[in-house]
Amino acid sequence: MRTQVAIIGAGPAGLLLSHLLGLQGVDSVLIERQTADHVRSRVRAGVLESGSVDVLTRAGVGRRLATEADEHRGVYLQWPGERHHVDFTALVGRSVWIYGQTELTKDLMAAREEAGRPAFYLASDVTPHDVDTDRPHVTFTDADGRPQRVDADAVVGCDGFHGPSRRAVPAARQRVWERTYPFAWLGVLADVAPSTDELIYAWHPDGFAMHSMRSATVSRLYLQVRPDEDIDEWSDDRIWEALATRLGAGMEGWDLRTGAITEKSVLPMRSFVTTPMRHGRLFLAGDAAHIVPPTGAKGLNLAIADVTLLAEALTAWLRDGREDLADAYSDTALRRVWRCTHFSWWMTTTLHRHGDDFDARLQLSQLQRVIDSEAAATEFAHNYAGLPISFG
Ligand SMILES: Cc1cc2nc3c(=O)[nH]c(=O)nc-3n(C[C@H](O)[C@H](O)[C@H](O)COP(=O)(O)OP(=O)(O)OC[C@H]3O[C@@H](n4cnc5c(N)ncnc54)[C@H](O)[C@@H]3O)c2cc1C
Image 1 (cartoon, rainbow, N blue to C red):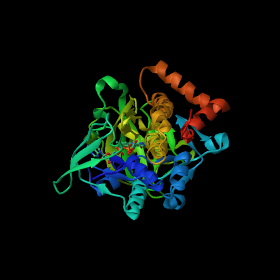
Image 2: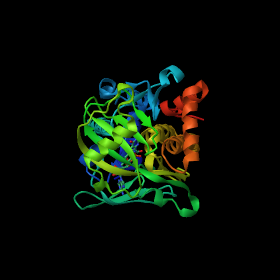
Image 3: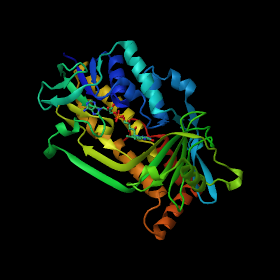
Image 4: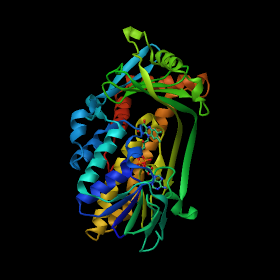
């Protein structure tokens, strides 16, 4: 099979890239390891920056988002005895939208099916070849056990942190920056109406807690735990009790509603960046190139930003014969990646309990500064609500 762009991985980055390229008349083939149902049901991110919403709307996949997503003007920052609202709309004129990654994936899959774009699900042994030549290709075994080969002008690795694309870049041409954190998140999904209108980020001596949501009837809640935490030690009652304490139940009449917990998992925290994001005719996008801890809600938004830049660059190259944007892709994308990496690190190290009591006082002083200083709040709002896609 021959196509212009072979895309490995049909998560949000791969699906959106294929859609954006299709709108510009550039062919692509998606090759995904899992079934479509598996990809559709993965519960992960839930906050979209306004720039991401603009991209999806312009691409014609924002219809359901426009009616079903919840617009949030800002977030609450909290520590014992105090809860403050930071209003992004008032500070920087931008908001964020609550829309589960599962919903976005459904919209992108529906658009792909409508356009009849080819995709191979349940592909195994997916391997990119000859990416530093003019004839790159991808081989794999399809769902029926038949060997397949896709020849392309460019190969894009949208295959997440564990996919094979990053490994196709020779070690001598690659540099990796990494930070692991001495804590993790216990995340739960609960069938209960959120107890807050907007996200709460809570610093607490027992550890960080966060109240997020997926819809009017589903809450998403997180607790800071140890990276090696045994999830079996966390009964539903213990989870609700810890959440109530850390989120300040009883404070100024506020209470935490409880309900049936439908999903429970421990999420490790990591910052990871690999450079460059292009090697020959192989391009990396989304989690294949970088991982941020989820505290800043940036992972999905970065994936959307990468493929927006990449779709423009590949269209200019493969349709219009101009390679300048493809040449600049890695540097352009990395400016935003590093800004978001810094913000996610800052949110993570400021809000989680680690270090000694001296560190705790510094964290509280920094949080207080965001509330007291309009300049500090504005900087926070710019980063959280999202910088322009081609920032820099
Ligand atoms: C458990 C978890 C929770 C998260 N929670 C949040 C959150 O609360 N907030 C937030 O902002 N971000 C969160 N993230 C991050 C966010 O979900 C990701 O940044 C986002 O999914 C990136 O999209 P992607 O398409 O680049 O990668 P992915 O969504 O990882 O998609 C990669 C795709 O490649 C496929 N693939 C992998 N290997 C192969 C292979 N060998 N061959 C073919 N296909 C392959 C995978 O099956 C997958 O479909 C979370 C991530 C995880 C893992």
